[in-house]
Image (cartoon, rainbow, N blue to C red):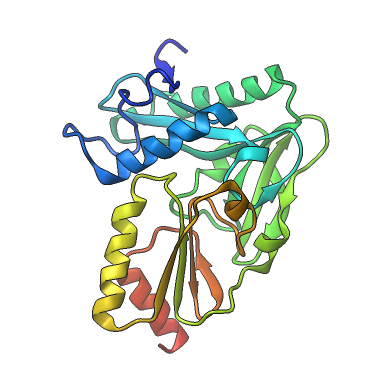
Length: 252
């Protein structure tokens, strides 16, 4: 794994994060992610990436007990994201990164590895067909066509928390839950917020600021969840054009 490096408390402030490739410092999403990540490292959170700062290939995972998702289980690792893009594709980076996570789970005596999936592949979710090649299989379901994929190493599967099974909120209009785990989120949220203000759309944006809040969310969640008139629409990071389609389908 000499081509890769793992983020540590010593290098977290200096190493370029792989999600957004930028030469200029000070990107608000990257700095928010860096601050969030710095706090998570002591909890066993792992961010492993290709050493080349101009390439995007990384995996991000954490012990399920401290992963900011409404999934429960004992002694699992949870994969937030496994992403390879651009020139990094086609070189086996995804396979090596996935294998490094599974190997670590075995070395630590974990019960398995799990990740969020869906009946149909969704944007912003890791490739579940790729995960299936390693033995990941559906072990639970939630509203919206979402599944929990797991690679059990000792036969004990994890499950969605009760809130994730609900898949709804009491409020009408737009409700968006988000955290700081993805550097694309600040710009995405501000674009949606400005659009809703311009169009007079009732909207509430709820920042998830703690592990307890994440575990108690009323739907599946990787770092984003969108509700319209009480119902979960998607965990994809939508833009105003997509929101227009959602509102149109529901009759406004």
